[in-house]
Image (cartoon, rainbow, N blue to C red; front, side):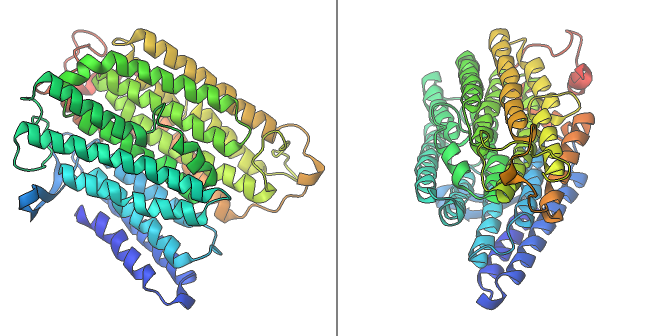
Length: 508
């Protein structure tokens, strides 16, 4: 069942790549769109079949592959990976749908999009360390070409920088996985939280640091972040949607699954320093975003700040903070995708992203009123306004982290206030005021450009009003990760008498 999520996009990649050139544009787009829809629908169906009360892996597939290397084809789904698999399917469909139908070299483009989807979903489903690494590296190849071929004027520089950073990230992750297996004396790379339990604390710290930097580059955390703004600015809009919405989540997923999950003892000791690192990322991302003039670069730096919230939640390592980390991953994926889509529409219609030039785009007659309205909704969600997903995710993060790290949590809350500052600056300068003459009578926004933004806005509001529809998938899994042998979290979530893991949401 899980292999179908990998096989469908791989088969689609092959079919689109082998199409005759004369049919590549329309037929290639239709095939990519169909495959993306089928993959998304299948992931949703798996969600309905998923038993949220179980803590064990579900729909497990385990086939021997290269026994001499300890490599097996082991896939499984739990409450941490399921929301991200569904998110990947949704945003891949949106990326294909929002792509310009007249894009150059369509066969190669759509093949790379589907290959990227297969690599990401394979990483989220893998429960063999070496298999995870293979899928993690697989997504590097299509994204490099998607930026380097269809990007902006400095696309070569941005793609090369992305390649170097991500390749170094992969080297560190592989080194960490090899260290876990060799030092523990395991005979395979099967994911097992008990692998590192017998290791000396010094070895745990060494392996934890190696993996932390590897995944920190991917997230990215300060000071490993410099590749991200360049990649976003030069990437096309659909690629930015996938980069911010899905690709960064490989890093945060690894943070929870492999750092916190494999080294709970070392993680608990390092947690105060990690929480401080989170504050640095949050505040740096926010202050740097305030200084930006390019709309896309501003949204890119906001991603760096919001990824810091996930590190803070993971450092606190309470069931509620981990739940907040998961919700923040999905929330940021949807909100950042919405913002990048809308910035792309503004650039397409006006030819600029400079907030010192744009004015009055909310004009109901000659501007972009619907796009402006959706942008305001996206800004409200990112700033954590109640009724939106951003508020729920940040509330869970702060509520779960405050009992453990009160100072770092309060400082991170300052970052939330700064988020409102720079995003309100963006909206105020770009959409309000008098529409300049050079932007009067802008081209009409087609429904192809409107529908993805409307869908994302509806989901952001829906899960902001009914978060339980999302968190019920993950709550049992994330609680079990912290309540087994070597558990990190000891702080009660609500009251000392609270015993059921399901009561953590009563604070809402």
